[in-house]
Length: 251
Image (cartoon, rainbow, N blue to C red; front, side):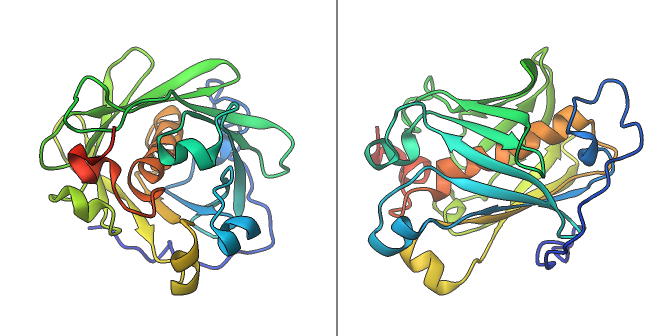
């Protein structure tokens, strides 16, 4: 149903044009999401991390399906050293506009134990814009398949993001299906794409494609972008590939 052709597109030099008007309810800077059905998130490799394996705060670029730079993102771990807390750390991610001067989204993940044996400690991520909550991504306990729920500010469920049937397979780059919360219809996917053997041998640098319907609510699109960041930290930040897929190995 869905094709990955947009994921491997090369970057172009032109800046994307925002959708005309964008609607009065669209937060400033999110107009680019109105007519977008694909986002590509690439982690920027830090030299220290690549050479000596020192974990650093993550930095990302976000492009649209045409390969145009739409946003930049940078992690603020709020004093928690990445080298100490690794993928379990709490974080705030500031998503900046294409000029890298104005914050358009703020992603907040509290510190949570990641252990599927303790379903009361499920992962959560809040997505906000200029102090207004746009949505929340919540992990729902599931024995066999990872499940994240994309919720609107009022708590209603907009989307389900379901991982592969085997938990350990999530660490190996399988697709996460984006499903309608109403009827389970597949609407898109979040996929990790291979970023090159040498890079992945020495770093945890990742590249994700996010595909969704163009007519999806902008706030839900922004929250789905946050879900991709949460998936990265839950399943791919640890070089040992543990965490949720390690079941009772980590607490």
